Amino acid sequence: MTALLVDDEKHCRDVLGILLKKYCPQVELLASCADGPEGVAAIDQHQPDLVFLDIEMPGMSGFDLLESVGFKGFDVIFTTAYNEYAIKAIRHNALDYILKPVDKDELVQAVMKAEREQSARSAAKIEDFVQYLHRQKLGDRVALPTMEGLQIIPSDEIYYCESDGGYTHFYLTNGKTVLISKTLKEVEEVLESKGFCRVHHGYLINLRYVHRYLRGDGGEVVMANNKTLPVSRNKKQEFLNFLEKI
Figure 1 (spheres, rainbow, N blue to C red):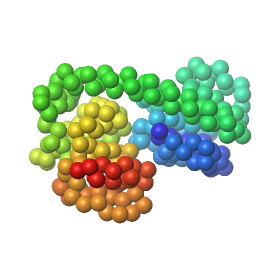
Figure 2 (cartoon, helix red, strand yellow):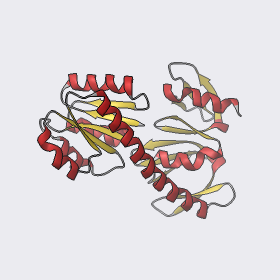
Figure 3 (cartoon, one colour):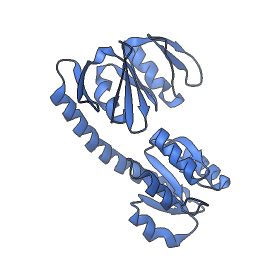
């Protein structure tokens, strides 16, 4: 489960980051943002599952941030020192509302709630997408919905897929790139049974085109087209397990 922190107080960001690491290890913290505009940019870049959001921030409040980005498939847990915002937070479809200083038990309960909500929502979206592609595919080919229509692509002609916010780029063996308006998470659910592996929050690779693996904290993978992609630390073992099955 990926997450962002948005809070103008560094101490609060540091404390929350420590609590998440200690008590909520299932949460991968992608970015810690010091103000609203930085939070907007990080949300667009990372497309997180969960955002921990302060309300009182100079320039752009937490409510302003949500109105700016709109709903992009993430849950919101407000963290604030002021309890008078609770009703407004609920109106902004907040998943939960935690008063500072953050209590670890309340944090754990809020994260568990987010997991349940995310699982239910993702399952529904993914099922719709899977059923759509199942209706469109012929053999081992998949029909990708592009701006121009449908492009039929054999799965073995895909080197890797790259996340771009709410979109996904498909890098093909013929050197071309196809962009579709689906998240990488949705694409992963369709392609993982076809020999693809998520090695990073931004990349889904076709294992048949892995050329080399370079050791490191998470490491890097070199694809057959000489493109080097990062492997995140928390995806490393899963990736190596996939390689053993090839």
